[in-house]
Length: 114
Length: 116
Image 1 (cartoon, rainbow over the protein chains, first blue to last red):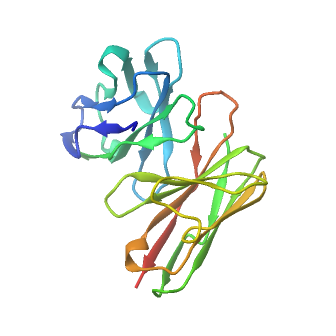
Image 2: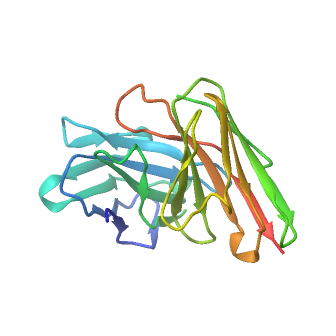
Image 3: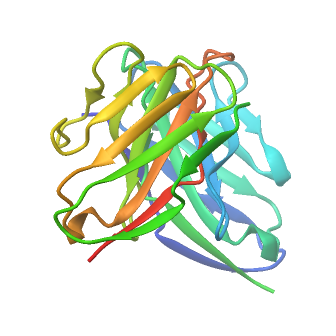
């Protein structure tokens, strides 16, 4: 069965530190990849997505992610985090011919210390 | 994008009772989904709500426990039936407008359910 895994359950960083959150998926076929963010008390919002084309995608708030097909990975990066980036981050994938449903990773809780 | 509202935003219910959650979208969409987010866990798809036909349930979820209605392209309901404390979760509605062709989904604010 297709799956998505996130390597880090909880990440704690100081402001201005660089961030990289890992995400791997299990399927070797056509896949669309997403990173969603859930700020405290708010609903899920899309950070960025990969559909096709340039494997380096840029999203909102200075986030970017790189799709590496050979590694089945879609890691999220930000060069300098802010306290306001404190949130839960979810990697998700939709796989070809699966009716558009999203499969989510376990989520990574990011805490940024001021 | 799509704006999604859910009612109720939260509820506390007694075991054995049922709760119906409503999801309203501000535009017509083909694809609507219901997810569950159990405490401290990720999102799990319950079912795809199909307009004009029965919902498509994921493994581990059944219609008797989670009946779903989809009377039109902007509205859906999820009922959590015969509740037990294990049903305490956040239930989320999402839609895929399908405009970009990439399965991007927009999520509602969720319904936080506590079962005593």
